[in-house]
Length: 78
Image 1 (tube, helix red, strand yellow):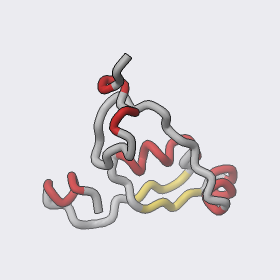
Image 2 (tube, rainbow, N blue to C red; image 1 turned 135 degrees about the horizontal axis):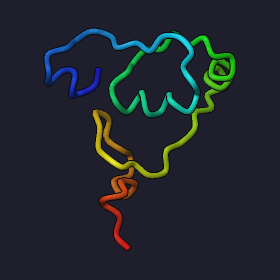
Image 3 (cartoon, rainbow, N blue to C red; image 1 turned 90 degrees about the horizontal axis):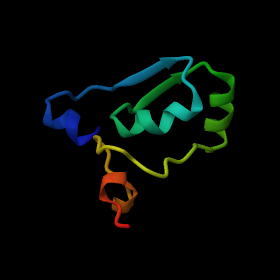
Image 4 (cartoon, rainbow, N blue to C red; image 1 turned 30 degrees about the vertical axis):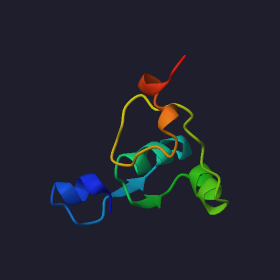
């Protein structure tokens, strides 16, 4: 359960259902979705292989912080 859900008093599962595209999964995880019922064949294959696309730069903070604080575009130092 993500901190924002706990902070806002929501303690249940947040599930994405249906034709979820593989490139959407990392973004959904960052914003608090914690369960998936995926029907997209490519996404199912990649998820079963443990292959998620990465997100190199984040444009805004979300419920799940980035492992690398420098990956936020507005925090980068030139």
